[in-house]
Image (tube, rainbow, N blue to C red; front, side, top):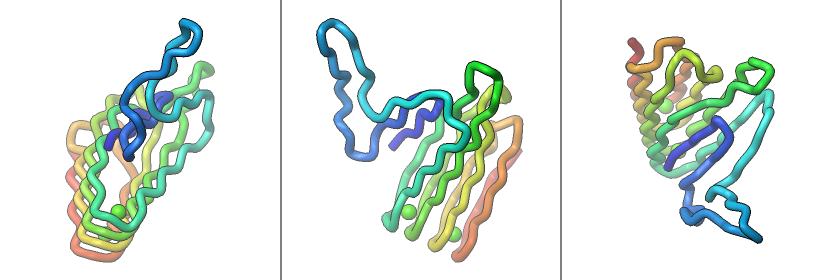
Length: 121
Ligand SMILES: [Ca+2]
Ligand SMILES: [Ca+2]
């Protein structure tokens, strides 16, 4: 699963093919723009999530992205740079791994219940 929160959410079992209607291409997944907050609730399974970008609006506002990992042993990999929006992770129940080693801005992370590991540079 991938969370491309600059303006698109993909994976999560959604069709991977772009949609073309009357010559206009719509990227696969859920497309969104100009958000203040973005929350993803992953659910009770063992989730593998890669966050490749978070949204910064056209006016410079950094959208706050919150990931609620839910139950299960979740692995969340944060691949962001300092120009991205802000991010917070809640591991919730389960033995979770949060890898934000390459993210220069830092994150807010709560492992919650379980034997959790968070790697931060
Ligand atoms: Ca989960
Ligand atoms: Ca946990």
